[in-house]
Length: 235
Image 1 (cartoon, rainbow, N blue to C red):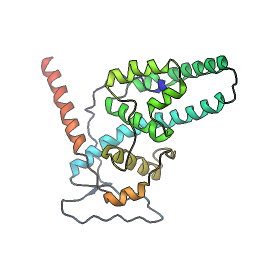
Image 2: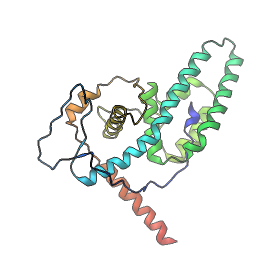
Image 3: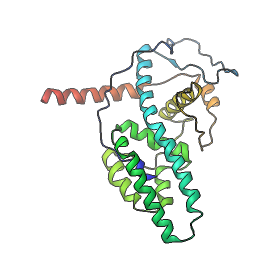
Image 4: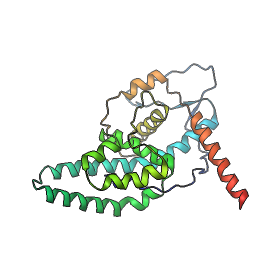
């Protein structure tokens, strides 16, 4: 499974989407309410400005790109675990793992290489969401040459921690990811796959009153924009 994450850096200053009519603009001081009923489990996100909506949609694209790979990683790991249990010989088990590794690398490496740092970080978090284990723990379980593969590519290129966990109840970025996923599931934009983690997102939504905080992403986007501008000026 570890071979799902072979990354090379890519510019993150994608143009922001302008289609923001489906989102709610709430001015500071407005009263916020969350209405949950049998027809609409996930209320519309609420934002402080129209510009914040655009950054949210930019971040949503990142989640949409990373999620299918985390989903597939979970499916492949479940299949691998089920088959390994039926193989009694250690040598045959090791041989089978190598065959699966080769297959996964050939099927997904090129697509994953196109991911940005943000997409790579989201993917590592979503692997924890989908499998119930961090990428690091999944590597330990597999016990193969994949460990070196992960560290020599993913961690070194992006400086990402393979021990990163997913906590939508306490981490703002994770809340944004889960909000995007649940809304996409509800609208049939993404194929639903339940999390293996124990959290109640409905309760989290009520506590946060559906308010979306995108300040950290606005700063990140501005920082990357400045870097790219300097590169262009040098040319």
